[in-house]
Length: 378
Ligand SMILES: [Zn+2]
Image (cartoon, rainbow, N blue to C red; front, side):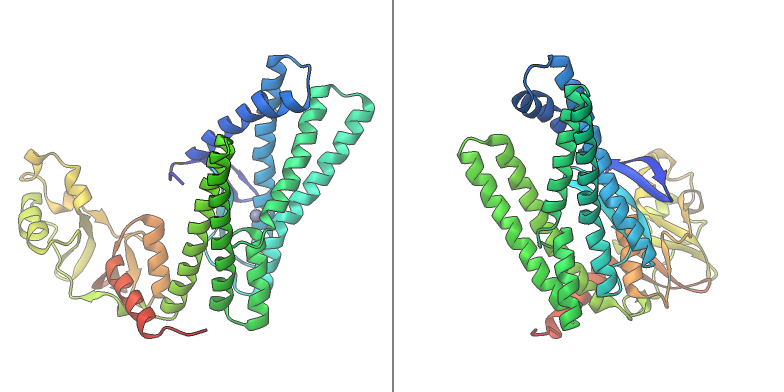
């Protein structure tokens, strides 16, 4: 959410990390468990015991979400979808897919794996809890077990709500997709449910807040906002994918881009290129040989008094698969590269030869035009 990801460990080739926003959630959960839930439900322990129970509960939540996302990832990998890893953030976890599932079947099993694993975990923990209570384990231990079993049931139940992009919404989409054969239509219906559910939570949040339940009210409100925007974004992504699939990158590029020679000084680069053409990126090339590119960001990193002494060669970035795409590549790939790297401009090459520059702005313009002209009424 806030984009500051901390990598924790790798598990069977999946990178597990937390977003900084998750730490906020961890603190919130520990506090609500230690100060509210445990003292209310299980009376008679010391303040310190409640805090330990709170920390154990938060760690258990962490493990439960990782397990849930991990099961999604394992099934996804079985269906041949490349997975980047698992990231926890303030509203839970995401198993990061690089692509959408290719068939309704793949999507159905991938989505169902999450809630199923949580139900299973809830059952196992409940069993341990029962064994613990009959064997007379210490009260705080069985209390945390009881909470973790409940938590996993809630995790499963909440995720089964058919509101896309929750797991239940994905299951719904896969069934509709199977019946009607249209990914676009089934995404629209499923994300419509998602959007509606989001609005329901927003209203619930406001009503709770007015009724005096401030913290749950804010919480519902934020989760509702999140689900609503995530469902709308997912639908947009499917539309984009459909519009761009099969189109080569070369179709969207500007041909014969302005290039800078590596020998030019940074001063010249600023005055004769940035200020003249107003582009944010220039390929660096001499006699048809492309050596890299230079952006405003690299110039900004250089003190003003050095502009005269340094050449473009010194500050340029070499060509890499982060800033260069092949002209024949699917345009969707170029778009996801922009998404992933944050580079809104890429050099388009044919072999070693520079043939153009592609920008996010041009692609979006094409998209909105295409959607406008070819709007399907289904
Ligand atoms: Zn899930």
